[in-house]
Image 1: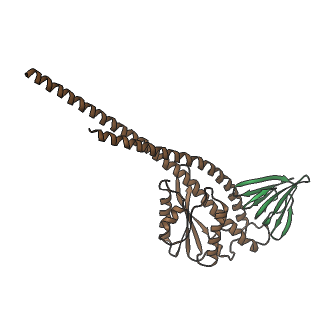
Image 2: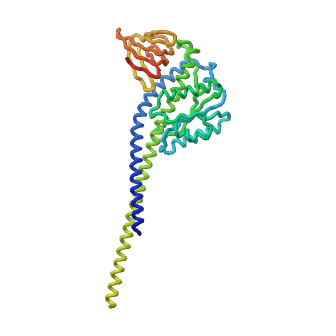
Image 3: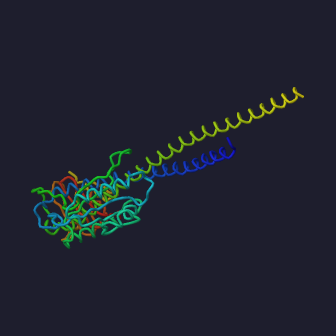
Length: 281
Length: 84
């Protein structure tokens, strides 16, 4: 065993150690961020629950509105993340979106949120991409997107909008999920409820409010999933680095021992040879 | 009997008070609701929602939104709201 090999192994161990420091730091950052984000998301869910209650009370069924009737081409909104290093999270979302798009007969194109998604779908049928969205999703961006989507529907370019986003099941499982945004799910309403102004006048502002809130919800959930995915990916990377260091250290020690043994054999052989020469002489 | 005013924004429930009367402004004009009022949904103007409790008035500014009253609760959903 040469000294060069020993040095090479030692170098590898050092490199893996510094890499492990980074992955461990990223895991801790993701963990801290997700805690904050999940708290925000839980509060947002209370708001969304109240919004759903109002939607169920509004008699929107059968109304003549392009956002309710949903006739025309289908658009796919893909919610991905701005940053990578979160395992297969983004690529799973992209794959699910592409599979869905292949099954749509009158496909209009993609609207993509998140830098990762935009760069993936750039060469495909990308209608609009939103990059570098903020850490905590906010209503400003969501209503901007809603504005664009609603204008697309109103102009008749598209009639239906589906969303692929990262559903958060639990800390270990996040998976792509498909949801229908337009046509908006409507109910026949509650007859005992009065409206001020009339429902006809309320329908458009309400649908805008509802769609932007739903978009914010998708953004929120994808973000929470992303941080959990990153936390898991970085934890795996840290564990793998640890395992690698262990194997490399073992290999290093074996190599060191082998070189020592080799040297001892050489010394002993040399001594033996000398002794033989002396005896002969 | 009192009526409960709850204001929700995307950052959660940010305001909750009990009172005898809740005043607000819809896009068509000012309104007030008392406890046990018939259910109503309104589209709010960018305005202030006021809750009166034993003559004491408290106000919260809302950036439009929607209001739902079921006789016991007045739920305001808005993008943004700020207490005075």
